[in-house]
Length: 124
Image (cartoon, rainbow, N blue to C red; front, top):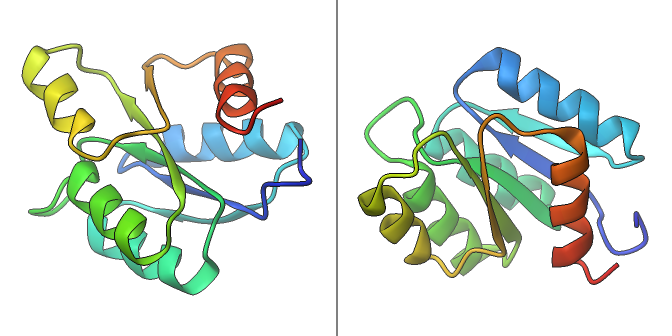
C-alpha cells in the first residue's frame, strides 16, 4: 500500500483525534508528514510536504473549514482528500461534495474502516 502514498497529512482540530489517526496510519506502515488544526496550517503543510493523501476534518478552528482547505489543497497540490466528519447533516454532506472528495468517513472511525477507505482510494 505504501508504494503510491508518499505521506499523509492529518487535519483535525481535536488533538486526541489527530493523534489517534496518526498512530493508526503509522501502524498501517504509512508516513504522516504532519498534523494541522486549522485550514491555514493544513494548506501550508500540504504545500510544503505535497502529501498523496489528506485526512480532513470538516469542522476546524478558525474562519475557514476543512472544505475550504481541501479545495485549495486540491487546486495547488492535487492531493487526494478523505473527509472525516461527525455530522451527517445534509448541509455538511453537500458542502463536502463541493470538492469532489476521494472519500468520506463518519466519526467514530475504526482502523479497519480507515484502511478499507485508503485501499479503495488508491486501488488496492
